[in-house]
Image (cartoon, rainbow, N blue to C red; front, side, top):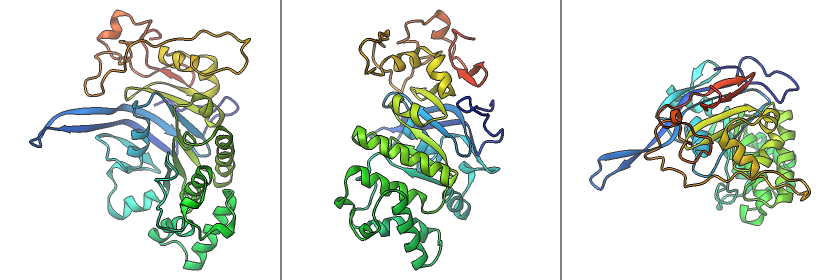
Length: 333
């Protein structure tokens, strides 16, 4: 896989912090008698790299496999196939103590800040729990670190003994971020971290994520359906459709030189505040095909206005069209 580039200001390190290759996740469909009668093909052979202090955004419609990709990468869901190389080790092959050790390096912030926090525990105990699991520090040291993380994420120290229900949605998400930082990880998967928040709170949380990324040298996998949000935080963007990565490049390149027809349609749907600016709205016709039985050839050809005969039978590979710009489309290869 080709090394990926940053927004254009500087090149990323040639050695990725995490390299994911041919990631595949199928969910079996069970008959009433316990037999497997098919599979939901949630993620289909996708590849990407994560670099230190950089953010890769993954976007696409609901059900395209974005969240499954993040969860499978962390082995919250077991992969069907593929590799995820982190510091020379394949995460998908680790077991026992090795897997527990590597999980300290990778954390996750979930979409719903309410259901992701234990309602029976005080927020101080919630933040300390990962440190207890990985046996980090003494009880007093864990408490001091938890209070420090609360302060860094914008929660007052005197709220340490409160329960999650006593906080707003934005505050709960800040607590979730503090919990993810507790074990000092290298990678954080952010699964729609601002989608449940008000617009004004979204910008505050995004700014917080950027601040702590610089301070803690973090790599982010930022999953979202909102391209305008991803544009603000991501160095690179990967576009997924029906479990497949159809385009991946730097953020600036994606917005100035869009290639894949699906990506063009997504960008055309972003609202513009200035009504005097006219832009073409690309409407994708038809329904999303079932991931149980995806179309042959290009998975987007049934809805693509530019589909050619080859699209119906031959699946396009994700190839480099321009430097650092990969696209899976027969129109360019």
